[in-house]
Length: 373
Image (cartoon, rainbow, N blue to C red; front, side, top):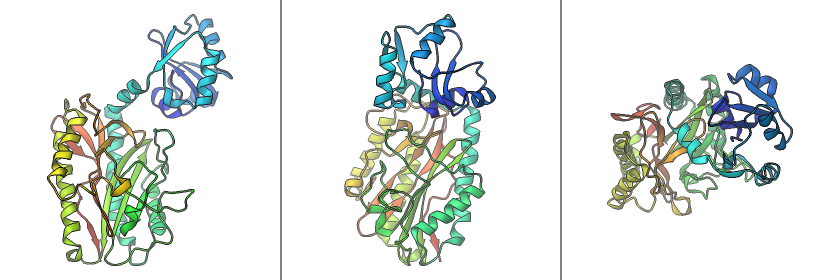
């Protein structure tokens, strides 16, 4: 049983509110609280029904001659506590087990159709951040003004205007825009880049009060959505002559580029994500960047990449405990970053396609800090 709109869309082709039932035998059945007419237009599924209560599900299935089995795998992340209690109340004869991991693993490996969308999204993403945005950046521009300009450029290139996350309670809008030490500001987001955001109620995008001035880095970490699929990319900018970038900051950034290259070479079918994380940890331990790697202070996170597709935070994660080997066709965002106290953050993030030759970057080939004169 699938409950989240995102997974219902993935499996049915329509972003409706309801329940999708995938039996071991027979055809999938889509139950809609809202949107049954739309689902019948958009989805190739033939069996689509209205329902008002979870009790209706087994009644309809019994009428179709295919009642629910005793043990049902359920997308548990797709239901609130209240709705799960309602489900188990009305389907009291069923035992529910988690289907979340198998759904995540299924979505992780992309079809050629999905990969083509992601490749196009990545190309547009890179063009926006590397070619189209720099002419609009200048001394005194605020983080929020940068955000507005990015939004205009992204939408002009076909961005759908929404970024989706799956972990409960996680959300994001457009991405993170941080000038200088804002990138080390305490974060509520499960990622290394800190930011002040628009407001405590909207801790995303950038602050209208923080201006970009000469001698400060600017880090932009955001996603580009095309036909529902998302690419993730981080670009660092410097206001002023490139030769004035502090040597330690440039050295830290170069370390991140080198680490990204090494990780990309490991993105081959058969490599466990945990092995990639262990490799990164060994590299960092032998460097001078351990303290700020993947976030400074309480912002530190313990992963260096994540699956991406219909959501930013997909399976697998390049972290400890993810031991099942990666597969060809997976798409993974690699994001080695280093927080430098009193300065800000440097580093890279790009979306890669897993191939037999290693990771193929979908979000352009510019990884260095872009100097804006």
